[in-house]
Image (tube, rainbow, N blue to C red; front, side, top):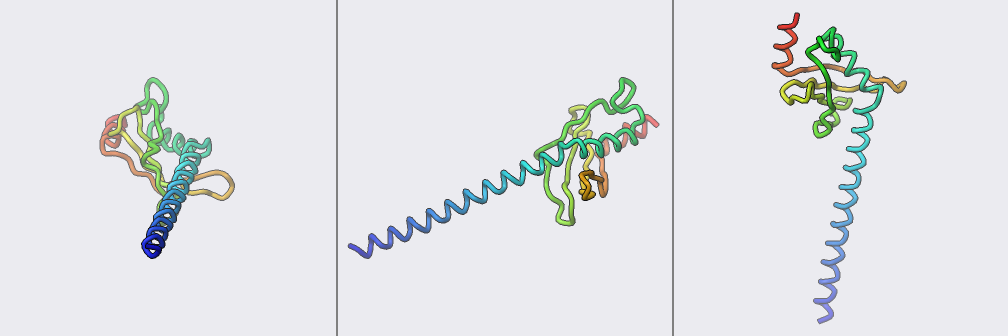
Length: 130
């Protein structure tokens, strides 16, 4: 009987350690996600998005522009293995109009994007406008 008790105690201890480890990992992931959101929504990052959008659409954010508004798709945030933070912004509340950025920290509190890609539908609209 004592041997069964030891085995149960050992199994319970192992299960508890696994549970604690998984809980710690979940907390870590939540903290990383929050850090990504802070970067992607920062004033400095927004400057990168807005400068790019105004470059593509001279009348962006005006009544004459194709681009009226943008939102950061927080579910798209992920770190790029080659460096930077991948961010997708959705334009005019339409999922099919989007731009992807790879935000890179300049080391002085500002950001730049290593590359930009945008949806085919946005490309068509911008070409029609020019």
